[in-house]
Image (cartoon, rainbow, N blue to C red; front, side):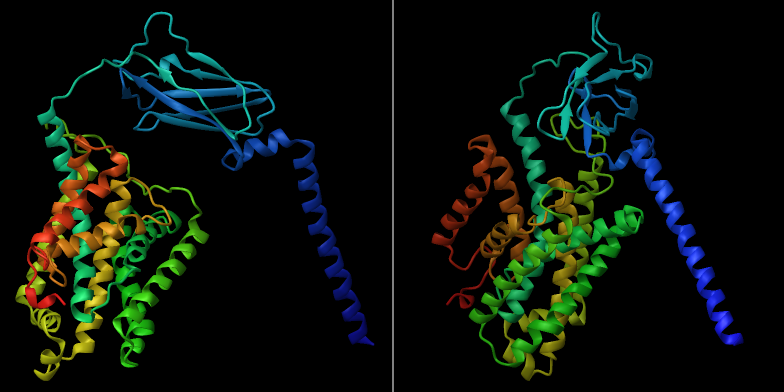
Amino acid sequence: MTTTRSVRAHDRWRRALVALIAGVFSGALLFGLANPAAADTQSPETFPFAVQGNVRVAGDPVEGATVVVTGGEYTGEAKTAANGSWRVPVPTKDVPYTVELVKDSLPSGVVAPEGFAFTQEVTFGPTSNVTRNFTLGAAERTTTSFLDQFLSRAVNGLNFGLMLALAAIGASLVFGTTGLSNFAHGEMVTFGALAALFFSVAVNIPIWVAIPLAVVASALFGYGMDAGLWRPLRRKGIGTVQLMIVSIGLSLALRYIFQMFIGGGTVNLPGRATANIPGLGPISLSVTDVVSMAVSVVVIIAFAFWLMRTRIGRATRAVSDNPSLAAASGIDVDAVVRIVWVMAAALAGLSGVLWAYFRPGIKWDMGTSILLLVFAAITLGGLGTAFGALVGSIIVGLLVEVSTLWIPSDLKYVGALVVLIVILLFRPQGLLGRRERIG
């Protein structure tokens, strides 16, 4: 009898608690439905529509200016970023909005011309965003000499070539030690950028810490791929053609897995917009560009020291030259190949981070977009040679950027491939390759 009473009392308390929770939830829901403006005001970041634009003076961005958007009973504001852009989410597009650039918020030294309209009217169309720009002064038309353009694009090409070299060196070592042309190497590049995005945005770690963590994650990714896929296939005696076909399938699978997580748009890493360094004349380099080039040079020098001076590096070169002879000499070929996969994935991951800043932005197929250039650099420098991949990458990077002086930018990748074909007609083994590698 006592047990039955306690069970009934427990049931009454449980029903009362459920009723209380349901009442609170229903009340909150009804309040939100009855007063949508109040609910919207609490979380403007969830609004499906937005008014956006830029504030510029004589072509230069204006940072720190305040823009106020008013429509109906809603008022929102935003400050311009370093690149002059601003964005104000709004709850609906069914009402007209007034966009005001607050005059008193303009930075010191920025003066609007006489008669400048600080307010604009906005009406949404079929899209979810509408753009309104404020231009405080007309930009002066300037002409740049051919030499200045050449210098600027050559420096950009060097930056691109160094970034490309990080990916090409790893892919070249994989080919030299295993004979595999890894078509999934582009996805290893994308993985590094996505790992940096995860650590910096999702985990909220500073970007200067997130990037080394992304490189470590990429190395683990390469270790897992070799341990779980490539090593078992090698032990079964699968030929290089079959392995190449597997890499193509792996590339497609990884590419669309990435798209499932980040969608088809472009996502930027923190710290993308940095100021240009003054005093460089016609050369336009931001702080991010200089850091990217410095990191590439330091990593390449460290890798060269590892490859030439360490015992594992010498074993790697031995396996790349002749795996059978290296095995007969007592070198553990499987262990060397495992290390090569880890190093290649780490370099590809770092290349992906730098590529995300150079493009700029992260996209699900960003690694695939440069995969052909990676292969071109490897072939141009000499198949299976790390230093040949470095030389080939710098040549390809320079050709890609400088060629836009004569051909449309949409065709700049084609120019590098044409030069590759011409060089191979005269030197089939590549610039630093050896003839015994051919055939």
